[in-house]
Image 1 (spheres, helix red, strand yellow):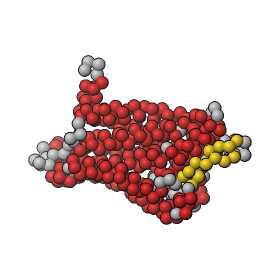
Image 2 (cartoon, one colour; image 1 turned 30 degrees about the vertical axis):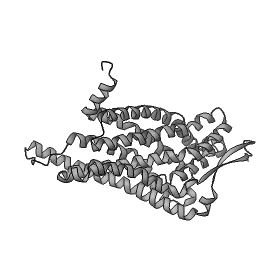
Image 3 (spheres, one colour; image 1 turned 90 degrees about the vertical axis):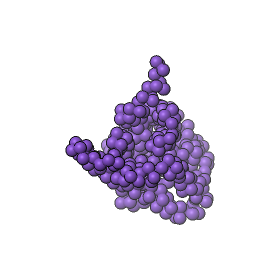
Image 4 (cartoon, helix red, strand yellow; image 1 turned 30 degrees about the horizontal axis):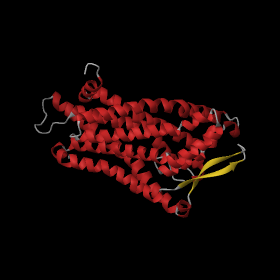
Length: 349
């Protein structure tokens, strides 16, 4: 198994979800330990209720965001990035909500829940994890673009031209497809008899190709999808946000002292809005970074522990919150977005 959710590939995460099925749905088999029961209760609230509420609201908000940004036009580079981000967040929220339906189904039919989760593991989880990673990559692009815009305003239009930004955004999707290429078809659906349930159920199993190349693929996942697209990306966002905050404070001091230099004006309102998007990402991805640290400080056998899967559930809930929050940031911090939204959905219009 790969090292963490940030370090785990979308495909390894699928297998992890399936492996965690018994831990999620049969708490009585794990004993009556108070901490286990507490984790069960928290996971029940998260997976059966909280995630579905957040995902439903967030999906609606991202659909509205896509419509508003399309109406506003894609001539601006920031609009291109935010439009693509909204699409990724929408895909993640919808697939997450579908995946977590097994928790609801298990309350009524445990056997159907086992079969449902196996199908989700094989056919849906990869898309969900890919959307999550691509969304994270967009936040890195936003933070770097704002860093360039506020630190090198003379060169910003050249370095962050519409063509280059569009190429970087599209490159996110291409890079994910390439990184996932070596392990497509990692998992297959098989049917086997479950002695505990006394019935034949669907199970997700590693494919022969994946097992034959396990060490190489795991190393590739840990380095490419783990370190580079995980902890490194997280740190890049933090560093760029810190630099942007520092520069915006300088701009505020210059304006108060009437010392702003002609030709070096910074779009403070846009920078603050995009900075808010990055800050929300940093806060809501603390659990992701915790999973990353836990996985690299823990023996591989402990990566199937209750704590590990509990952190993954917390991570997905927080990322769902992150994917749902951007609409509210735009509506409160961008007058252009608000006016476009109002003109699009106002009864008067």
